Length: 182
Image 1: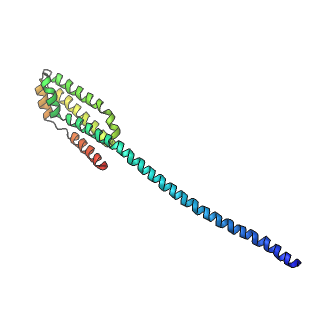
Image 2: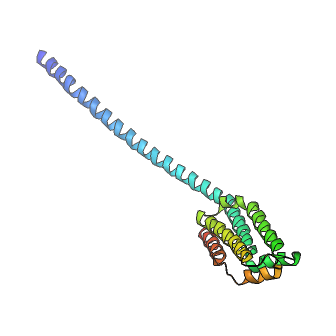
Image 3: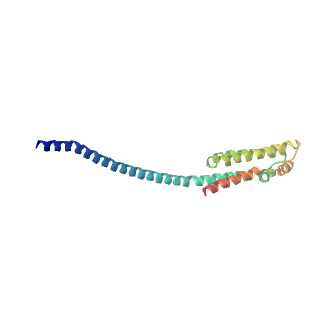
């Protein structure tokens, strides 16, 4: 009987820890599988939530981008020498008055549209600024080539001889940027 007790004791000492170990290992694997499944579900929900937020954000930002592009295209179109002259020439008698009127108008319109840079690409904004600078330079250069007592009509003729191609390039860039979102 004593040998039976020893065999039983040895069996319990060896088998019981092994059994407990195997049960624990099985339990941990099951929990790990559940944890991995839970993490996948949480990631999926998070991705869905982020996509939803991004979609909602686009609903807000897209109209702002459209409005900014519209305003900058209008600004650029109004800076075309022929358009500037049609607005300012009837109001001015001499070249100095016309120069000041045009430069003041460009400065005011640009300042009015400064915040639009938040909603357009850096490249489109830089091109808009470059177009503005080129038109300002055109006005100054046309004025410096004329005599002091030149008329507004003389300045207009000089300005109309020059082209400002960067305006068209800036407008094209604004359109391209909008097409990426539309």
